[in-house]
Image (cartoon, rainbow, N blue to C red; front, side, top):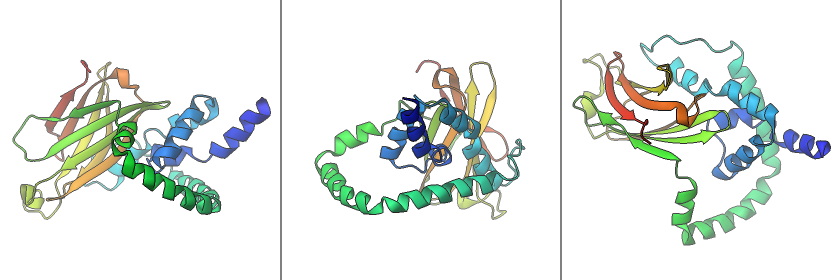
Length: 232
């Protein structure tokens, strides 16, 4: 049995970074989450990387709130892992191509069922606290290392003039997760895109049942939108 476990761990050992960054296909993501239930080493590796999507998103944001710096060699380690994983994926391309034909046929006949498989455990619409034409929806899924967040922002054409006070810089926003102990985790930042829809993936080490609220902050730190999860 130990040999079987080692063989399974070897297959998934390099998937942790892609999982946290939301780079796995829905099918691979479900396989990896099933593996996490049985593999403490992979759960520990994923937990170590849980805050990375938010840190990477904040790295290039203007006037971002100061946050702890990730390890200096983090990007190099993640790129190396992805390169090893990519080599393994290329070996399976021929089989995947054949299976894709069947997947397309099933998708045509069962679109509703497929959408239900990807439906988040909790979905919330952020409530504006000030006048804004932007809408933000957040899906939250419990995972072995905490909670995965899927963020969708819709902007109307000509939203906000496209810059902060005529500076030419895009409007920026930040998603903050509030825990049941009052702690705050800044998990994602993004810029506005008038007339477009933006989708992002983020993560927090907090379990879903310990998240009591979500806030969307402006680039100046004001709370623009909120959602209460205490009653979800």
